[in-house]
Image 1 (cartoon, rainbow, N blue to C red):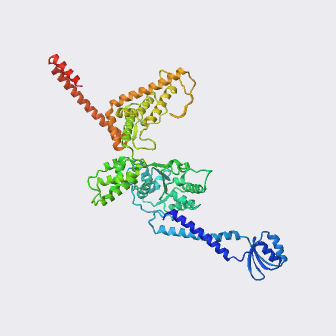
Image 2: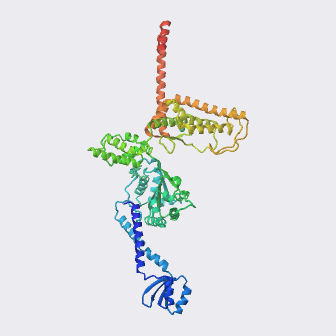
Image 3: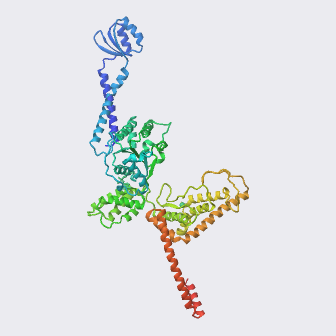
Length: 632
Ligand code: ADP
Ligand code: ZN
């Protein structure tokens, strides 16, 4: 039964309880009479004794019959009661609250019962997995290690530092530095964030406390905040320890301050409690809080401040190499037939997350078993892949092969232009893994912070931007919209080159822009100028871009083997970093020099041949040439 169903059932039981109990209460109260009847009996002197509690009155008449009623005007009635010498007793008016409390008895009973029920269930370790209302029991000695998490090389050094600080905190604080308190793991679902947090605990052999962000919020009002405090107290008692909060965005979303509904209030209280706890522990209590999210953009900025989740590790979907490593990790758990090429499997599943790969391996093992095999073969992987991909296709993860090829050449075009031109930033990474709306990305990192840009640098940037479109033109002969953003940026740079930086010879060192935005950003205002100047500026911008395009076309045509090599590498590996690109470049240069030598050799041979031919009669030589031309 799901949590929701249990909740609904409880609600129903509670309502039944309240109604039933109130019926019971009303049946045990004495005969209720109207105020008019009460006054009538009083005037007739039939009432012997009353007991007052606020306006509520209980009493006995002369026939020893118990009754109850309500007096709207107590002081006035009291005078009459005294006149008629009725015996009066009274008590403080708590009847309303008392009555309410009494009617709530079943609610408390049921709630209490449920809490006890869920606690015992957790202790018994039922198969239901995470239980929300349990005490926090850490899992000690998690057996997970970094070995179990594949393809995290980029984050590794940072994570090792965290493990170190858990192992010997003294070493870290001895120089006055503070130990990282919070680490935010951000990345798509299934990329191994939970696994990584467990691995950190495992490597440092410290207890691991885990809770989901949404667990806090689904609890009863006011419970979330106290659960946070309970969690931290428990972790501090077990320090050094790790607290893992999955889906922190459920409590850590931006605080609204205004249109808060009830549940938002609850969420904000919980978030505040978390912030207070994170700020509040001493350096001698090494508790590291690891949080995971796939929506870092919606987090409350307060969470990311120094001393809170100031370490952020991004985990992206694995590339082909990463997928092979993850496959290797999971393939260890099953019986694999010898000779299954996991690289091939890895290449065939672009866009798969770590969790989907784990699922694939498991599925392949099941399929193999169904076919009565003794070991899992490549064909089982194929079948499993098809089965899983069917579900994924809808998620648009698996992109069309043609689009992939065009993207590979497009990105290779950018990267090669950057590599071959002087005065450019080194290529850091090229990828054809789709990210957000972009199909691919070429990333250049400047060697140092630049404050001024040379004309050559800016012109080369335009050429690099043109490189994508040029490569598409050379290889496929048709254009795609993939370059539209490049062209926009290139035009912007050319525009500023002419109008702002005064770098154009024909226009001269005159600024036609008054206010400048950021580099390539903002919307500058223009100084008024004549139609003629406007025309010249337009022409000049067009000329610069066209010249850049043509020069890039020459460059990439001359090096078109490099282009093919790099695009091929991208299609196989999806990501190519700067070093790998250097290797591809090196191979290309090697081949080129061999080719050159070969060509030189052929040239020499031809020259020798010509010498030999030149001995022949002139007419014969001419005819030979003519013949060849006609063939074409
Ligand atoms: P997340 O927390 O990012 O949603 P999980 O850590 O829950 O992802 O991943 C689910 C499962 O997927 C893991 O238990 C593991 O079996 C597998 N997995 C995910 N990423 C990796 C990885 N990098 N290496 C090995 N296994 C992985
Ligand atoms: Zn581009």
